[in-house]
Amino acid sequence: MLVAEALIIRAASIVEKLPAEVVEQLPKTMRSGLVGIRNVAAHEFAHLNREVTLGALNTHLPAMLSEIEAALDDLGL
Image (cartoon, rainbow, N blue to C red; front, side, top):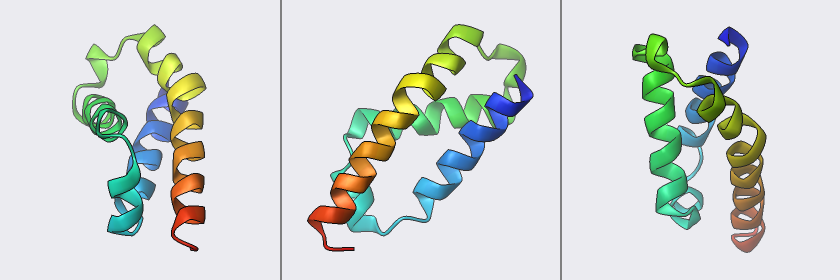
């Protein structure tokens, strides 16, 4: 689970560094979900649910990557 926690924290850090116009194109639920699970991973890791964490890594992060790539393409970045 330590690797999963580190990946979630790193993904949130990367999203924070994206241009605002890219982040604004991401669905709000996607952004808030990443922030939420990142906060749990960083500060309350004992409360992380294994299924939720692995679901985020296997499903939600790849979907977010697709959204980011689409936003970058739309903006010509």
